[in-house]
Structure formats: C-alpha cells, structure tokens
Length: 89
Length: 275
Image 1 (cartoon, helix red, strand yellow):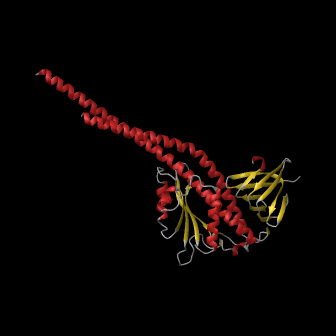
Image 2 (cartoon, one colour):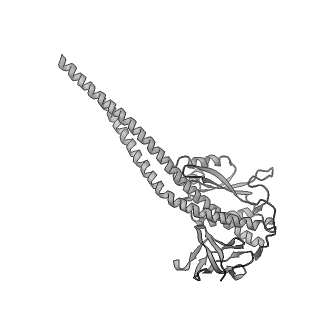
Image 3 (cartoon, chains in turn purple, orange):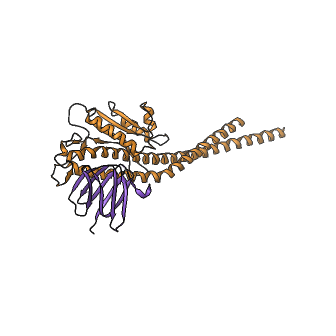
C-alpha cells in the first residue's frame, strides 16, 4: 500500500510523525478518509474518533478534540487542541 | 573588640544562611530547566506548524478578505489614529530571577494606553488583577482566552493584539519582546493554491485563527517560563558567588579583629608583669 507522511501536532508537541496508509476522522461535512495521493485539501475537524493505519499495517484509534486538517505537497498535518490515543485512556 | 567580633560573627552567620538559600534556589532552578526546555520545544514545534498552516491558508484570495488578516504592515498600522492595543503580558510567579520581571515591566511602560491581560503573579499584582499562574498555565486556559480575544477582535473592541513575553536566546540571555498576533499579518501576493476547502475558505480560516492564537499563547507562556527558570539560575549563581566573596571578606575581618584583641591582651599582660 502507498503511504504518506502524517504529522499530528498538539500544544504538547508532535504526538505522531510517521508514514501512514490512511487517516479517518470526522470533517465539517461528514466522515472522511485521507489516502496517499489525495488532492491538496483543508477542513475543520470535529471532535470525535480518529483512526490511523500505519505503514506497518498497525491500526490505531484515538480521540481528537477538534482542530484543522491540511493535506499538502509536503504531507498531511492534523492540528488539534487535544489528542489522546485510545489505549492510553 | 569583643563586641566587634560578636557583630562580625552575626554577620557571617547571616551571609551563610543567604548562601544556603541561594544555593537551594539555584539547584531547584537547575532541576526545572530541562523540563521547562522540553515543554518549550514541544510548544514551539506546534506554533511553527500553526504558523506555516496559517500562511498557507492566508495565501488564498478569499481568506484575505477575513477581518483576521492584515495584508499591510504588522502590528503598527499605518493609520494616523493610534490603534487600540490589547496586550497579554506574561511574567513570572516569583521574584529573584534577575531582570526577568523588570524587563517585562519596563517594556510594558512603552504602551501606557494598552489594555493588559496579565499571566503570572508578579504582573497580576502590579495591575491588580485576578491571579493567573504562569507556571501551571494549561492549553485549556489558552484556548478559553483565545476564544475571548478572537470574539472581542471581531466585535471591534480592539485593533491589535500582542503578547508581551520573553524570548529564549540561550541559557545565559533572554530578552523581552512583543509578538503581534492579531490581525494576522500576511506578506506577498495572494495565489490560487489549488487547495480544496471544506466547507469553504473563510470557515476553515475562521476556525484556524483561534487555534493559532491559542497556540501562540501556549508557546509564549512556556518559552517565558523556560526564560524565568534560566534567569533565576543565573541570578542565583551570581548571588552565590557574591555571598561567598562577602563571607570570605568578613572572615578575614573577623580573624583580624580576633588577632588584634589577643595581641592587645598579651601586650597588656606583658606591660603589667614588667611593672
């Protein structure tokens, strides 16, 4: 599977900065998933669940407290005020 | 002479206790430095990512119409009328940190008309406001403040928002500065980036700006705290050095006084036996 670089940044620093296959979360107009080769895109992220499939095939879920998602040429960035992996809870 | 040596002994004891205090405060500051620097690095990384994202969003022509965006000069607007300024001032919770708090107060004097939102006990006491700790300031507090600031800005209650904080250069030097954050200043011409916005450009930008402002608050508070700890360590190091020097001088003076009283006693005894 093709991968792309995802950075998840919160006021506590970069929570995640690695290659992923997909990112799924709730955008302003509904649920969305970002795969490699997605067009440049920006949306408001709503608070809710978020799931990530890493380059090694591992599936991770987290709770995101809203924020902004941008997909650009240099990678995908999710900025959020709070982000917590589900296994941490 | 007896009274003299007694006075000196009291002074040596007092300098000794100051030495213990400065040493302990220096050690506490040293242990906090690493954690404070780590926190600062993390929040600076977040602020940089936010800054990059805002610049990317603001390059779109539609976003430039937003009241949050200023395409002209930063902070100091070219209007003749003095802009109504609001300043979030970040100082320390404690003193004994060299010129850390004094530098902030000095810079604040340059903006006598500014409306001040203080963070940190020293500045809260100075402007007689409710106490907000700078040491335990959380991201949640920053988001709440950011929301209020953005709402007030849109309501036209002020023209520009700045953060008066301390910039960390290195362990030895820090300097007070103002970072103008609202309106967001954008340089260069707008370009059609080909980016798709959902639901639209203005909604995305208007949601991103409070996030940006909060990120800047968090980064400034954490950077200022790292500066405070570093300044305190340096101040305590130099206080310790001075106290040691003072104790040495006093000990020398005490020994001289003691010796001179012994010599005098011997002289008196010898003179007495000679008669």
